[in-house]
Amino acid sequence: MVRPRLTIYVCQESQHGRDPQHEHEDGDSSTGTFFVYHAVYLEELTAAELTEKLAQLFRVPAQQIQQIYKQGPTGIHVLVSDEMIQNFQDESCFVLDTMKAESNDSYHIILK
Image (cartoon, rainbow, N blue to C red; front, side, top):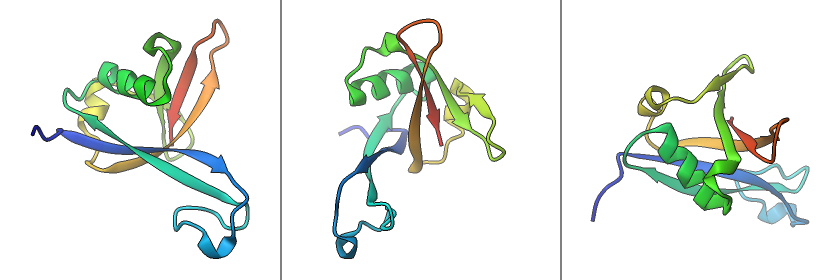
């Protein structure tokens, strides 16, 4: 069994009419929102590998993911590079947001 060099967790928001008494600890009981996390295991620590893994996770062709950005503390979007991924802390958690690219049918992914 090979252990990945880096594990990150990504989530999507889902809206469900749920009983607030059974709200998951990582949700917002006032809006009925909860988060479903998916583990992404990286071995090569490259932006290309992250793109491929996210494409597999969301069942879209990797060519449709044009860029991946990480939202900085002031809200700026920083292009994710191999070096940035190599400096991610193991078991980091991100909320994924997508923006449609203006020029074609591809998307930009923002890690928040």
